[in-house]
Length: 158
Image (cartoon, rainbow, N blue to C red; front, side, top):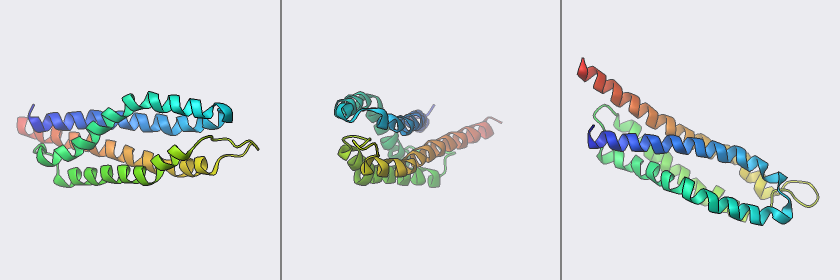
């Protein structure tokens, strides 16, 4: 395998790992209203400490791998696929920094004492599917790059 194919393979593995993580998060956040408001801060801090080593290093591989494919792009992979994935990655992290990350940091409980849901939590939940969709789209786009590379290699073998 060439260096470009290794970069593609690592980016693919990290991207699909991210797809699993984002959907686990998407559904996991739905459980937050069941955490008692008095326990939420401790629960949220423990959750945050737990996900950092599991999610961030692999997300960094997917992010930097998207950029690395600009320089190390396998011959069968279209430049358009690479640049589209870079754009999606930048969009994911820009929106996370401006919206979802900030909102999550401001979430101190999901359920209000009166039984209703916290407006910040509701805002996060009503829009977070966009982030999940973007990360999923990136994963499938990198999968498409793998298909492009394999297809090119099969043509060369024949």
